[in-house]
Length: 331
Image (cartoon, rainbow, N blue to C red; front, side, top):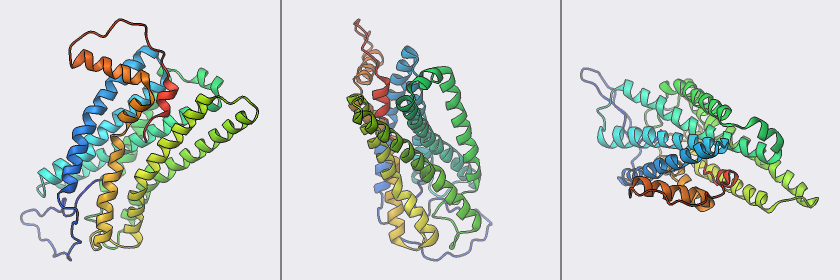
């Protein structure tokens, strides 16, 4: 999903290849390799640290919200491994052209599976926040760890099922010009699955939450912490919309305006859009630290235990605030 030009064009011995028209030049040079290497080198350790901290919080508190956050972190790790490391650094920068076709298509399935899981776990978080704020009594009755783990498992299974059709995906550097009907269907399915449908859910749930808080404030029943939680939720969903919008726009432009392979401007726009979208997989740790004092203390405990090999200090447990941490989830 994050290719560079000519990276997956394979010419096997004995196979006749037709001459291609001149492709659009790569204007960013080696910058994507450096960028993704730094992103992986920074994002993978902090996501692993986040997963360890969240697993401790989920085990201690039995709160469903921490299980959703742990699932989101896990899907972000898979996204970084399959898309950034295997799909770009390994396949493109290290292996270059010597990549079998079956390997490319299998990697496509893994990339889309990880991508869909990350985004739809984020949708679960948003819906969970909507139910907790707008239907608190129902939330207390329905939200418990066992049910949450089943829902998360179902989402990951659905992500794999929706990733399988993309075995036949042709990346924007290798598809025909103009695109075939199958290619158009897959690219529109991709845009709807990872952007248009999730954003519609975000906008609908956030609008309902805002209206409810306004009514509570007008009747004198509003609570400042709920207002802060809503502001954070709006901020993080906006981050998702902004970071993934460029890739979606370039995808549609490629289908109906100009080919990436022929127009250097679309080529450059896709390179930048891919880099911006992948930035989303690294932001969660920093947002959690900014929002939640409990999370920061748990991270410090993990570092003391595993890095410095010293036992955690004996003290009164900090009050856990899963709603505040959940509101700071990056999308």
